[in-house]
Structures are given as C-alpha cells and as structure tokens.
Image 1: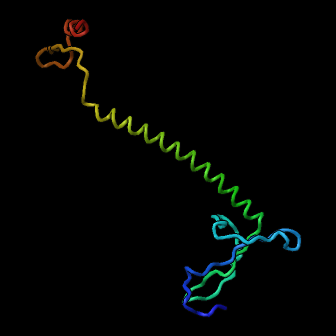
Image 2: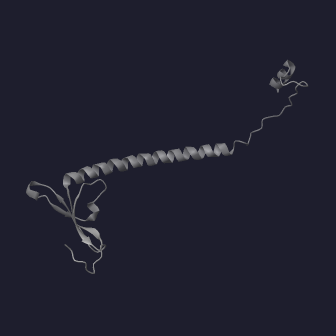
Image 3: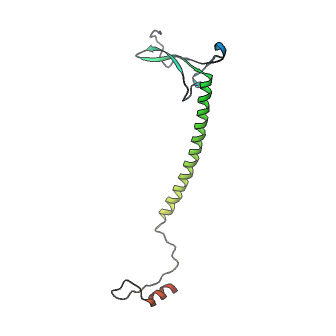
Length: 133
C-alpha cells in the first residue's frame, strides 16, 4: 500500500505491461500509450487521497492485437463515414443554393390571357392564342 506523500496522482506512473509466452517469458514493459480503447486489462490499485490509483496495468499480447484490429477497423469505418458526411454536406449546400434561387426566374417572354366574364376556363380561341405565344 502506498503512503500518502507529497507525490500527486499526476506524478505517479503506473507500470504497464503484457503477459505472454511460455511461463511469462514474453512479458514486456510498456508505457501508457500502449493502452487503447477496447483493451481488456487487469489493474492493481492502491488508495491515494480519497481515490484509487493504478499501480500496475497488465494485458495479454493477444488482447492487444485484437484491440488494435478493432481500432483499425473502426478508424477505417470513421474514414468512410467522414467521406459520406462530406458528400452529403456538399449535396445539401447545392440544394440550399437551388432553393435560395427558387424565386428567381429566367423570363423567356410574356403574354396576356383573357378569360370570359364569370368563367375560369379558357375558350378554345384563347387556348389557341396561349399555345401560339
């Protein structure tokens, strides 16, 4: 057990390493950068200042290999999703531009349409005149 001293948890460095090989011959000491998401670990802790700190973190080389494979696959998936997100953003921006111009017409020509009094349907002569315009 550690005695509470002037050391703070940020200055304490837990020992990290792998278990492996016949009779533990393949054991390696590693720094904290070897710890990645999804890695199964065994942690030995001590109480320090009202909390727990890790004295030793151990994991197998097989578990580390599996965690690296999962991380690699996840990063590939994030990369693919990132590309899809960028493509969707570009399509959304193009659509936003078209919708912004929806009230801007390219006027080709004008014509007058005359309805008979009290009628909402064009007479055959008015239809012909409209089609010829």
